[in-house]
Image (cartoon, rainbow, N blue to C red; front, side):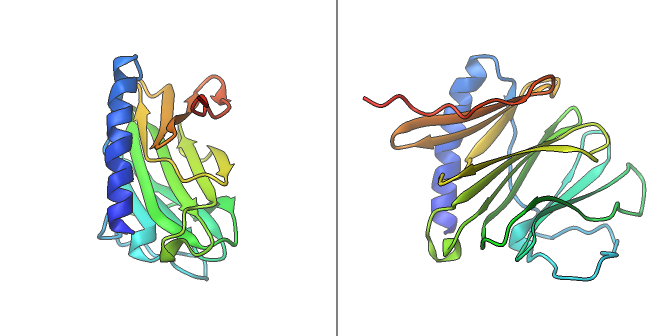
Length: 198
């Protein structure tokens, strides 16, 4: 599973570089925080916890932190922490699903805009492709997120955020060509763009 994800990330990085040349800002590295950094805070809600592979914590440029986790039987959850604070917000469910967890959580940030990639799929941990691909964008105080779900899709490989954080591009470079999904602060998500069939 790790090699497949690394291959997808490399392909997506090449695709993102081409899109950057077209004016989509700077690509951000993505990946889970393997420490499962928690800031010493405890989850105030009872229930299942995420495994480290399915949780990522990101420190934003202004010092705030956001943690996103995938929880079996629940879906995607988020919590955040103000800069310099010791307490975290309560967990907030961004997307509910009972489908199996898949491929971890990727987060990136520019100027307070946070992008999120997560996947779910039956037998995904056994190597099957995802069946539910989550693209998310959080802005402002991170209390409201725009979420887009693409079903029957192999998952987003990378994101590119422009310099002021007002636009995010989700990309996946497949054998058939480049798939991408745009998000704009003033418009939200647009429709997914798929490769032209020959």
